[in-house]
Image 1 (cartoon, helix red, strand yellow):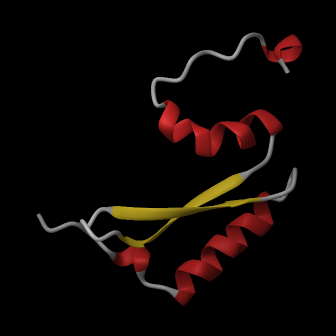
Image 2 (cartoon, rainbow, N blue to C red; image 1 turned 60 degrees about the vertical axis):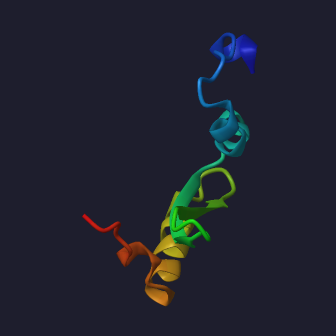
Image 3 (cartoon, rainbow, N blue to C red; image 1 turned 180 degrees about the vertical axis):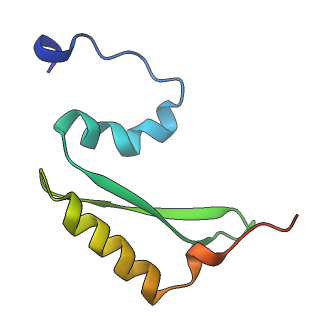
Length: 78
């Protein structure tokens, strides 16, 4: 991979990138969706990972998940 794209820069959010970087480096499409709140009322999300060039399927999966749940309608109090 480094031969094509150069060295991988260190991440400032390494605890977050551990969930996304492997798919980014492998060229796999992903979609992240809200899926609720934890016990401290903080948002949770899930990530679907698809095969190469399966973006259309991921968008359909995300849309189907949102239609079956109401997590995407949750908003923090202002």
